[in-house]
Length: 313
Ligand SMILES: [Zn+2]
Image (cartoon, rainbow, N blue to C red; front, top):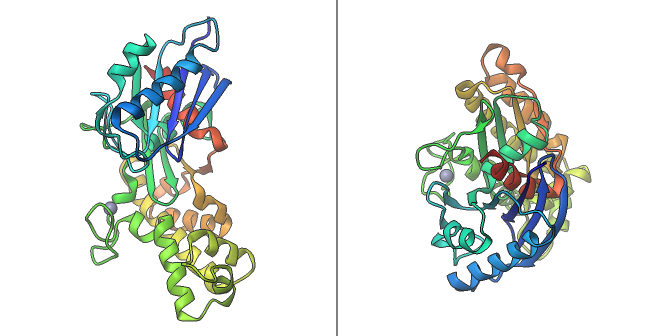
């Protein structure tokens, strides 16, 4: 009989959970909004309620549950060390109490790591062996699949692509270093570039879009679509930097494929053309031809990533 699993996606402002089959079919889904001021016990109970609702949908007991959570995750011990979206998740042991309540094994993984495994199993990385996945959003994260398995590293921290340093004199990063890939070309960094562009007076369309507030990466994309040359140049620079970062990692890992997901992909070819060119300029020999593919999982990437982690158990 085909196995089914429970997948939970706790990456954003909502907690989403679904019952997922081995082939990635979503049988049922539920979601609740997160309460940022929830106590640890309250947060845990809310998650348990959500997962129970999904578990009890069918007649068949799922074989495992997995939660994809943004932040620092100790998957081995089932603990969330810190999560930006749910402050109550600080040094919180999640999997043991949930496993007791659900009666099945419960796993947790960093959301970007889960996304990598989701692309490998269900998405743009199907049919490959070694995959490098990058999530390009407000921050930059990622995951590494080697020989079909998620590479987690000793402390489960592997895949933090956003924190490779490209310029030791570069802008400060939230992690404490300077010039990290994320600090130079993540969504927040591109928003900062956009705001500087507005202040320079050289981007009237962008200034109009962002009128009365700070410019964002989304404004930059909109200005580029309306043909603003300075905005296009800024996005191209960001794409080039991301390409240099990914090309460097390709020289270490030599993957079959690079897959990309995240909000910055809305910038389209303004970002992707220089990204691909930057990557190809840096990767050694035939690795310069490493294909770069866009996620095919859409809004369900988080859930399918979590499902892939549960199915890999
Ligand atoms: Zn950093």
